[in-house]
Image 1 (cartoon, one colour):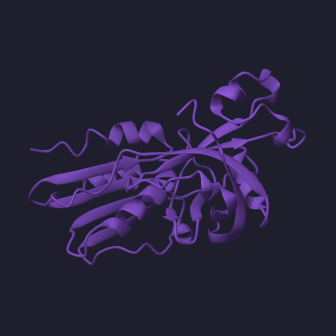
Image 2: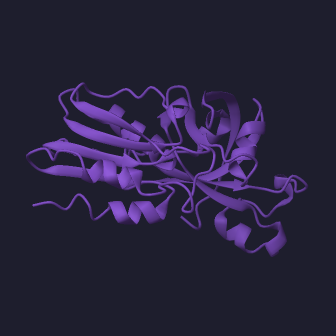
Length: 244
């Protein structure tokens, strides 16, 4: 990915899905160079260029390698986000951001974004998509994994069977997720301040791990997808599905 050029997108619209999840739709000329992929965990790297730097004055074409050649203080901040939806017909991509108060770079940018604003990103890459040959599907994650899980649920065939466990701060952050009737969705409420997400807080006392390991195992071959920002909790969870 290092030598691939960046795509320059424009903000089309923004919308609050829940108190701590903000959706941003991007379009414009970025789709001239952006090619969607079939993976449902498709992700891109946003390159946030400092406000006092005019991107047109930087070495062209803009690539991760060209950024690496800049003085450290001038290098953009890179953040990875899942593409929730790509719509080639509309020439738009949708990205959902978890809001951590005023912390970080991406969240505050998304909150302040207005139609017409430009943003640079590189990608997409990905590795997972639902296997129609699986007998059933198991999904688990926290807010950071929600976009990829949502995309995977939408990609399942109508007859698919499975379980999805998503850890969030509380009931206010539950959102509508389209899925087959045979897929049961469980929202796991972490409690406390819902905007505090990370290894130090998301997954406290491993509520997601407990929910997954305490659930009834379905018969047959399972395909598992686990993803989240709280990597400590995810590492505990990844060995859990290995049942004979």
